[in-house]
Length: 454
Image 1: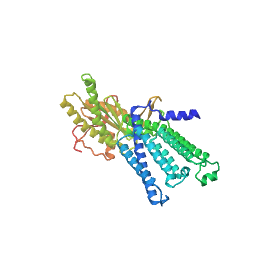
Image 2: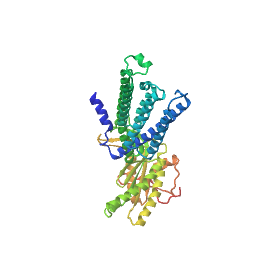
Image 3: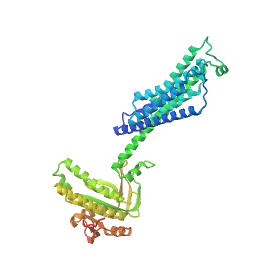
Image 4: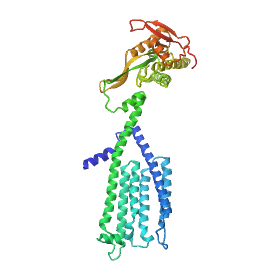
């Protein structure tokens, strides 16, 4: 049992092995907890004020003073100050502890004052049900998801109640403050040690249970924040829909699972990039590549495409593979036209800057494909497999020989028209060409840079 509790607490609160971005996420969650705790404290204050205002006064008419309004005012002022502090940023540990001390001091001080307010022996206040609010103040610390503050709150409450019991015992006259008779205890201002020990044990047990629960919940929170950060990072390395498949998989992903569907794919590649890499410095080369991706990836995604992978200076995208689509060919053709326009603008800017990029080639094809998980178990990848993917890659390479920015498989062009695609190309050239790696000539449509306005 001891090892279990120790394991839960130790693994629940450790952050040393976490990346800084994960620790930042946790700090953000704790800050939200600070704000939530402050809001709850304000709500409690409002509830206390409402109950006090609506309830009939039970204090004697000649009571020397009325402590409740003063305590409520002090608690409200402290709660407002804490809320304003929480809105500015995370509340420091010293303020957290001060808040616990303030809560418990105000509550226990109010309970202590009852014997003066009602003109009774000190042991009178030990019967006050107001003690139950102690558990609210202990549980309130759970909102920050730190067991330490729950334990501090419980320890302060138990120590404070012990001090009140000791004061009542010392204030009793001729030893009449203590009794062993439960009936006498319940019907007079006396002390029953067993009853007071029960109260302190209850405070300790509730504190321990909440603290243990918080430690376990914090461990789960750490894992959740870590996995959430990893999932967000995953979406930067994978297409969002593929990343969702990975993070949402109910079972461990294994290679060998595939789904067959009709889809379209296109390949984009920079011409002359290898030659450029030999004459520019690495930083410039990476900057150009980053600018290239930033220019051409948005048009693909804007038309429903998924980035399957980056191939150095090449981009492989698919339409209708990750998620079945009745317009996959039309979407691919719309993306192809958008890419031709975006690439032309980008290349013109590079030429004005004196960067020698020969051009951009795009190949598009469609047909039955298999979308699935491949690899050896240690290294997996979601990708598309099929004749159309290979053909699109070959058509992209053929753009250089044909001196056009894009080549589309003729059957894909026809399918796109049937799916509602409206060409922007002015008199697109349809012909039968030889493509490297394919024995027979291929029917294709050649797209020039001369496109109508969208």
